Image (cartoon, rainbow, N blue to C red; front, side, top):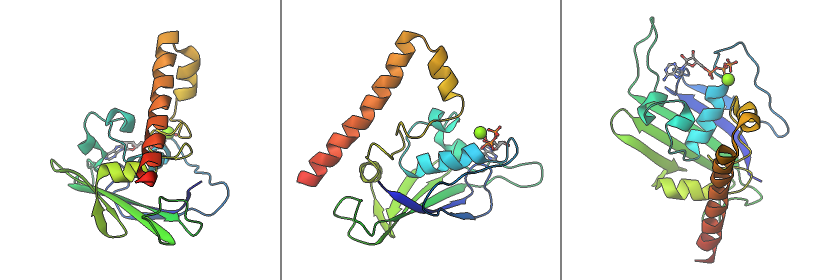
Length: 183
Ligand code: ATP
Ligand code: MG
């Protein structure tokens, strides 16, 4: 399983100033009052791993992840999230033959997203493949967003089927990683 070691946000949702969080081995908890940004942190993780749906980010369009301003602070035009992975046991695909892998996603208003891994620009698909593991990835069933458990319990069978199909999308990514490894 991939071990995250660091998350850095800048201009992302409510995290207008650069904010760096070290993620130690073991369990990490985030506590704080309503609206302080706990869910935004999880969304940052989902986003840097290649999430393509603005709805999954609770927005109407992807630019909505960029800090939109408050009464005291003007909006930004760029949002950036960095996640660092401990790859000393080489859990990442073989082309990432380095002890630390740093993935950065950046979005500029009206310009879309770009990704870098250890400074080198790569495609969105490569980032998705890097995280295409049942335990991680933007669409991993390991990331359960707020209200989702209740929604699953109350869902109609057809809606539950939709969720299962979403889970099946993960297995699709998994097989593409397998295919990438064979190349
Ligand atoms: P709860 O305990 O209620 O679940 P939370 O800690 O999960 O709260 P979040 O949902 O992460 O809180 O954060 C919500 C806050 O983030 C709101 O105040 C909202 O205005 C702010 N926010 C979201 N998107 C942006 C944005 N693009 N620009 C500025 N602020 C934003
Ligand atoms: Mg929340």
